Structures are given as C-alpha cells and as structure tokens.
Amino acid sequence: QVQLVESGGGLVQAGGSLRLACAVSRSIFSINVLRWYRQAPGKQRESVASITSDGSTDYVDSVKGRFTISRDNAVNTVYLQMNSLAPEDTAVYYCAADFSLRRYWGQGTQVTVSS
Picture 1: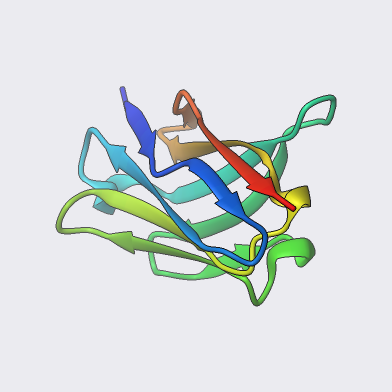
Picture 2: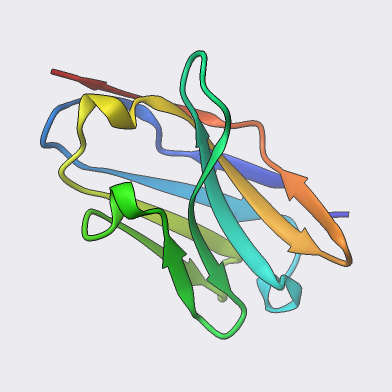
C-alpha cells in the first residue's frame, strides 16, 4: 500500500509560481515512477510530468521549460515546481506512484491561475 498526500496548491496570478509537494507513505526508493497529473474542468486527466527511480524525467510539451519535477528521497517527497503559470494550467493536480504493478493516487490539490 502507498498513500500520497499533495499540498501546495492555491490561487496565483498569471506569470506566478507554485511548488506542489507530494508526501509518500513509504520509501520512494522502492517506487518505480512518480508522476504528476492534472485534470481541468470538463477535460480528461492528463500526465504532466514523471520521474523514475534513477532520476529520469519527462514532461508534457505544454509545460516543458516551465515545470520541474524532482524528488527528495530523504523525506519521501516528490515536488512539482511550476513557473510562468498561465490560466490554462488551472486544474486539480494529482500525484501518482507506480508500485508493485499498481498505480496509487493522491486526493489532489487545486491550482487556480487568474489572468
């Protein structure tokens, strides 16, 4: 079992920054892939960024150069640094962990970007 708890969401003006954090209930050394997803109203959930156990990262094109995913193994936390935020980044952001052939999800944190 893996529990994930996101934090750091909020309301920010366009051009601003936020850092999301996802606290994981077990050692993330054992997590194959950690991911951030988002779901905007009326849209499907989309993958935003991922980081593997060896530190390899991947991003959806729309956030490349603006978002950075990172992990701190010492505190079992994965982060999403979001810069140059735009209204289209408004969504509920979810953390996910791929572990033992399952994907675990957090409850989500709301990010709202005002124009």
